Image 1 (cartoon, each protein chain N blue to C red):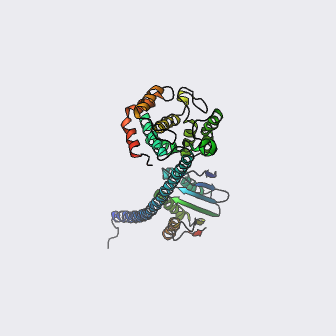
Image 2 (cartoon, one colour):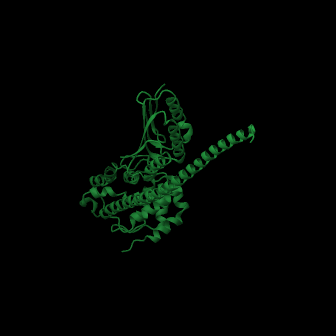
Image 3 (tube, one colour):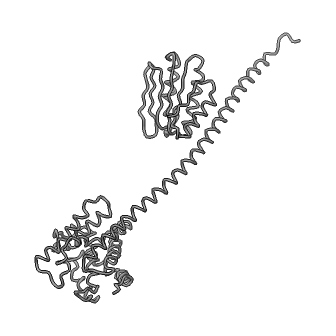
Length: 264
Length: 125
């Protein structure tokens, strides 16, 4: 038997204990980390699934809202159309022309598309014009003309309360599509860029289509006559920049006119 | 020793550490940008508290509705500290969870399992 054990042994034993303690703690920590990771992976998966579901719901609702808006606007446009002498595909063509003008003018895709959807409502105010005036064959006398011209204000009043961008756009279009670049239009005799670009665009689109269409009270103008008028009215009735856009992209307008012909 | 109050934010819970009452309340969401930095004063407070300022009985209420994984890790560390203090202090822990919040319940169960010697109550709301 050794009387005095080597001191080294107790030191090594202390080290061994210390080492065991440390490794135990390390093992405990690693187990804990693993547990946290497993839990967190599971949670992430659930959260992601939930998010996906919610996103799909939101997208469906968003589409539903947009479709409803489009339908409402289109239906209102059709109501306006049914009350006016304009027939057939007039509002559809005005919509397409407006979008072409808007895009070339520099509005972005979203805004141009919105103007396209809103422009069919430009004559919605006509629903409040008495039949006797609205359907009168021949020319209006001055009182009748005055009443007829209120359709811009009436249309604006119908739509102005809305906070929806599409209906706000429609309100502007209804209000300003009879203003003229030189300030001789109605209802507010706005001039130049005081007239909202939506109003300036729809004015051109509306007149181009009205002149080029047969109506019960007039035959369609031929293109040359229309183009001459547009050249003459550049800077008078119409925004000169829009007239330039019109002539620079004439093929696009004629293509639309051709694909949306009125069928009698 | 001062009480410690931290207002709730979008990413961090409301924290109320009260010396006189011997209560610790951590309520809300916990996913701070830097979890350990955020909880550093809380851990420090607890160490100071149990180092000669503790009441006879200390009650900790955790009601954490959402937490990131580093918050889980931090809570394990916090419970480690409580476990060390357990012999000399009477400590009661309430882990409060919404019955529909499965993650919160599971976390509570994990703590109970890992800290058998601590007095952890799972309280369903």
